[in-house]
Length: 252
Picture (cartoon, one colour):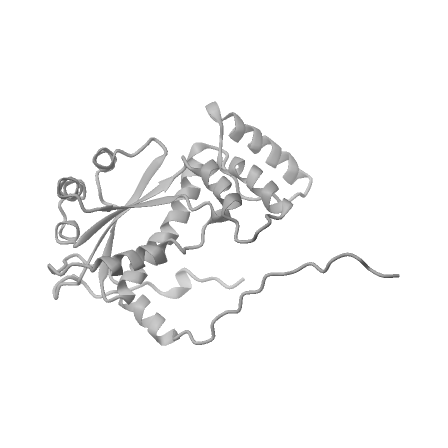
């Protein structure tokens, strides 16, 4: 009996074999929170390359809930330095980048995943997935959807059903977008270091002033300001140290 069912094609992507681990280690170990920069500018093509690498960070369901505001307008930059308490890492930075987590584009990004899917035909399961996945991060008016999910998940777990992480309240949604955006921020500072530049991730900023300066919407959340530039000779204030690894790594 002949089998007329067409063979299902799988996508394969080979991992590169020539990655230099020692150079990667050098990038990670030499990344420091630089508090003072020189006057040297970051070339535009280098900055763009670093931002492009930031956008390759892993993110939940490829929804990419972030925006990087590269603040180059002199008036806005002056306000941003003020918002960052006028600390050296902001005042002397060649570039100031505000990293913003977003909840206002979940539906748009879900649709884009269908529209820009890398194959000519979008598998039905993928279409179905992106139809429903936005609800995983929404909580609805007066948290109605969040409360419904909380009850439904609790019942499911009493039946020994494994349920994924979801948003039961607005804080859960913000946490999801913040975690994802922070991964892209790490990509950005490591990319800068690989290109010979440095950075300082600043959480010490006046959020209302940052919001006003950038005219951010209610569902845009600034999570850090990154100052970037060439490290000054006295730009690192103290040696790096970490506590004993046994405090943080547990093999179970």
